[in-house]
Length: 416
Ligand SMILES: Cc1ncc(COP(=O)(O)O)c(C=O)c1O
Image (tube, rainbow, N blue to C red):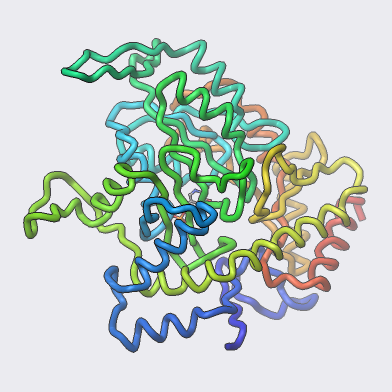
């Protein structure tokens, strides 16, 4: 089977200095063609079909290291997965959900799809992930746990924001860039404050916290197989959860269809199911997961080795107790770098046919979210955003290309 080099944000093309080196393109070198042909030959191209279940089962086995568990639920993309995961976590209109401000915008949008409100948390200066100490400070300072009005045989408690008088229902740790959030203290806080945890593992296939794959510690975990991810099916996602959450997610993603009565719907659901075509590609990719991840880790190690003596830059962290997946290898430029200076570096890389990109502008500064609550100053997130540059990290990046990236980065940062 030939190696297919498909593309995402940039078409592979001949640049003026040689081949354009893309940031992150898919590597489709396994059974993708064969499985897709099976779908086309059989006519199973929609959301019913054997590959959906095969992919779900294989994903559960992969994510739980072969331990049995509830099958994961395939969804059309990670954003839809986050939406239904939050609904399954019983996030209601007017609730509050804690979320990092330094993230791709999808988890925050998903909070708003539930008509709930984000509370932004700053980034940890060492790991760039959600700052657990800031989460704790916010909960201690602003919140209190109160027993709910007891029903027969039921005794539950809810966390309340004392100032806004809203229920703080959940937290979304977003595992950024193929690293892991500090899950152990986060889970302890979630237990103490009765919060549900929806892990956004969309960038974190292959990432472990301690012995566990991320996405499996919280109540629900969500993955993305978007075209630029380590493991892709063009567009798709997976929600992992224990029963009864997983059952509820499956129900919501199929228009909340009542299994016992034809075309009867107790509540509002969604058409969020993964198609057999996408699942076929996803399964073929999953079969190669270890090889794809080994390549990502080798690329990260090569960048680290080649850039570690560059004065003033900060290399990508490897948070303690974790095994990173290094989705995008990212460095911070010198302290005090402005957005304009960082953009100039990106432009000069592009002029050398190297696709690099900034991190996401912190969400508390984005027009739809400027008025939302912030638990702290957000200075770390702003600083990381201003200085971060993600370097080409495609699985198919070869050593010649990597050396060219390193040589250009070193030259630019030396001020040449
Ligand atoms: C952190 C994070 N969350 C959620 C998503 C959304 O996933 P999707 O693009 O599959 O909707 C992405 C990116 O794609 C992401 O990077």
